[in-house]
Amino acid sequence: MSGEQKSTAKAEQAKGKVKETVGRAVGNEGMTAEGRAEQARGDARQAKEKAKDAFRH
Image (tube, rainbow, N blue to C red; front, side, top):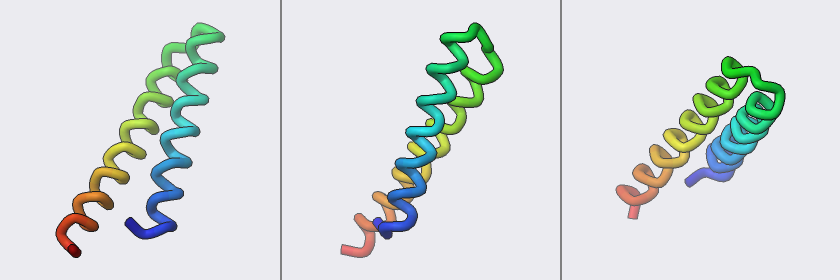
C-alpha cells in the first residue's frame, strides 16, 4: 500500500469517526450519517490498496 494512500485512508476513517461521535453527542443525525459514510470510504480505500498489494507480490 502506498504511503500516501494509506495515510489518506486512515485520515478519512479518523475524520469520519470524529464526525459520527460529535453528531451523536449533539443529536445531529445528518452529521452522524456523514461520519459513517466517511469511515466507509476510508475502509474501501484501504481495502482497495490492500488488494493491489496482494496482487503485486
